[in-house]
Image (cartoon, rainbow, N blue to C red):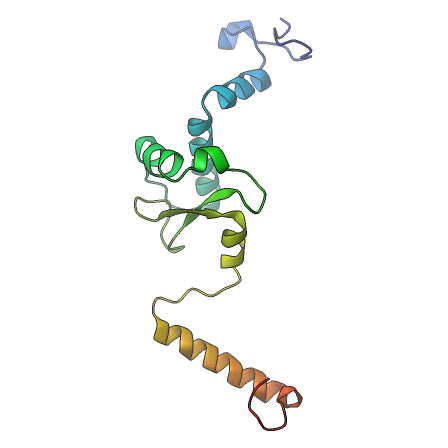
Length: 147
């Protein structure tokens, strides 16, 4: 049986789904009518594919991410749009570990090491500076110690 969506070439399986629409049109209609649930299920599937824990409920996600953060109006793929991120990457998608940030901030985060305290961060910066100055002494500015 042909799908009832205008200009669709797909076929609906009347016996299996009891729907006059093909699977692609059913999926598109669901995503259009229930965007929060569709995004929640996408997040859950990506977590499963990557092997991360996923213990949040839809109610928690809907309240904290979708409504409170303004994610519903500003999600997307451009740099100003919002994305869902895990604050601590060692944990999975669990309550209290989700944060909403722009796509550019989330992208930048993977290039900056994460430190739990300021002392560890300063130690890593000093170590990196030392290694660079040893490897490339010609970059040092005439004994000033600044490269």
